[in-house]
Image (spheres, rainbow, N blue to C red):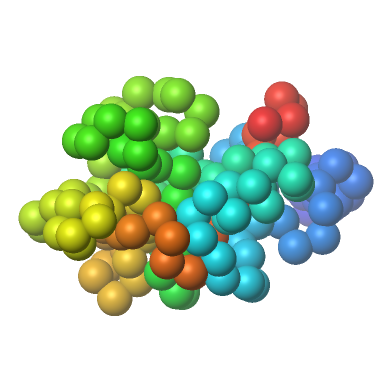
Amino acid sequence: MTKDRDRLQSLTNKSCPVGWTMFSGSFYFLSSLSDSWTNARRDCQNKGADLVVIDSLKEQNFLSELINVDTWIGLSDRDKEGTWKWVDESPLIFTNWDNGEPNNLKPDGEDCAEIRVQKGHKWNDKPCELSQRWICEKKCNTGK
């Protein structure tokens, strides 16, 4: 079993850049910098990835262990207010919104989603131009 684990880790290391973490068919990269949601997404795309798309409680729990600061995710309603979409256009089935969220509270709107650490890793809508860290996701075999 140890041999199999070592072989798998060796394969993973060859196909995934340093600083990425593998979980359930995807690689994840947590930024050490802060920037707007748009610039965060651009950074992920420059890495051959995109902002994370969270489609299960299992993935949410994994990210909760990985993230220790408020972090952008790949969810927004920038195209149409109230219609939340993932960056890969997949349907919003699993959600983890905090109580009362999304609420579009700020005068200029809150069109981008974050994982908010101090609220139990629940999701919150926030103005897209605010600066914070982000998490990228890249599928292991599709090059997402």
